[in-house]
Length: 92
Picture 1 (tube, rainbow, N blue to C red):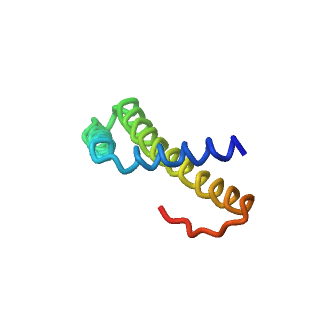
Picture 2 (spheres, rainbow, N blue to C red; picture 1 turned 90 degrees about the horizontal axis):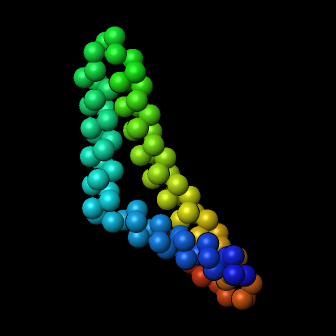
């Protein structure tokens, strides 16, 4: 039960981060700059393009990780509700 509560708490923290305007803008700007760097790299500069694409993928992975925490929290909340015999509607 404690693990479920921790997952639920993590989900709310992840949601807060995922919806944080400054963080969203920072991630957007990072992705844009990495993609731009990859596009503007010299045709022979494979390393720069590869590094820029890798960096862009890291930003996407962080966003996906936050979504994963949120999804896990929804499942934890549903299980907690089931354990307590209550029915709830879950929305993010």
